[in-house]
Amino acid sequence: MEYITDTKGPARFPGISTLGFIAGFDEQMALGIITSKGIEPLKDALLNEKESNIREAAAWTLGRIGKHSGQHARSMAEKDILSILLEVSSYNFFFLIQLDHNNRR
Image (cartoon, rainbow, N blue to C red):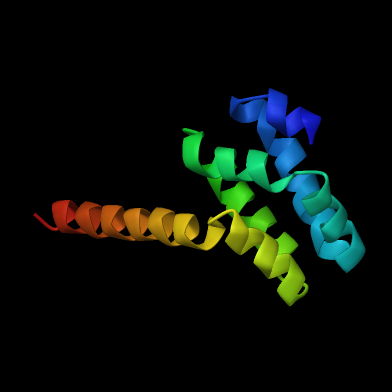
């Protein structure tokens, strides 16, 4: 957790991706990420990173953490992750529509 908390930008990507693979492997490992306060730096990456691949990796990792049980999902809800994911995905959707509209002119 320290690595993805202390780093910013492209250097953060491998750490975020690694957590996603760990979280997806086992329910207990995902719970370990939650108890080690791993959701906050992932939330920060989702909200503040400029590069889309880092934000996408954070969203993917958060999904891998929350998929195991109601307890895992509750931990995500307590950090307001779902509304942030919806906000980010809505922004990206409207951005893509605008790009498509501009390309048709």
